[in-house]
Length: 206
Ligand SMILES: Nc1nc2c(c(=O)[nH]1)N[C@H]1C(S)=C(S)[C@@H](COP(=O)(O)O)O[C@H]1N2
Ligand SMILES: [Mo]
Image 1 (cartoon, protein in one colour):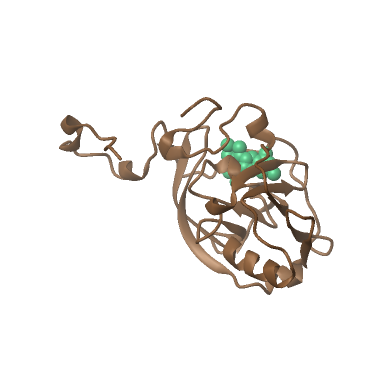
Image 2 (tube, rainbow, N blue to C red):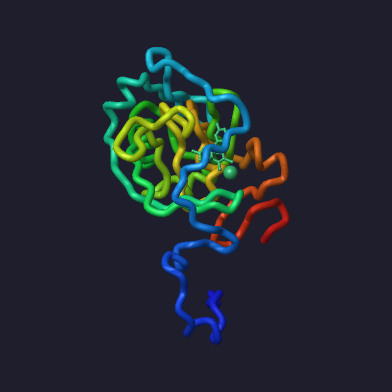
């Protein structure tokens, strides 16, 4: 891979945090709320999380069962396609690795593509390989507290290495698929993959 930094630029002193800022992004200390529709408020008593296999097999967890899965804490930078980035955000949640392990014990096998489906109807697609090996979580905590509803609580997908629209709020289901299927923004012209470091904002961006 060739360096994206030209020779002349390499010697210059970069602004603090610049190395962590993908192209075209700026740092914010706020936590903006971006939602395509109203914030759903599903009571925990009726909330469940479903992992659906490519053949239709389902593993389902109530809130209490989901809370009993192993949780991790992580600190990560996040990057929204509207150009804000936020450094060092602190989350807790269940890794997709742990979820798949629990799902396998319930008869759900991995498949190469995933669609996340949410209360309110939002969907987004991610290759399974971008969720496994410590790259994706179902987050239920933010900054040491339960994830606020406006940021996706009780549970959201967290895929910090892709643009933040992939981190589906109010997630209720991960559907494993043999073939890729674009989600809400991907069908409306956003990039199918959405790597901030390659500035894959819109369909047609390389
Ligand atoms: N269900 C759902 N998830 C969503 C969205 C949405 O509208 N609905 N917006 C996406 C977009 S475009 C972004 S940038 C982030 C914003 O998350 P935040 O509101 O916590 O900052 O959520 C993503 N997940
Ligand atoms: Mo976004």
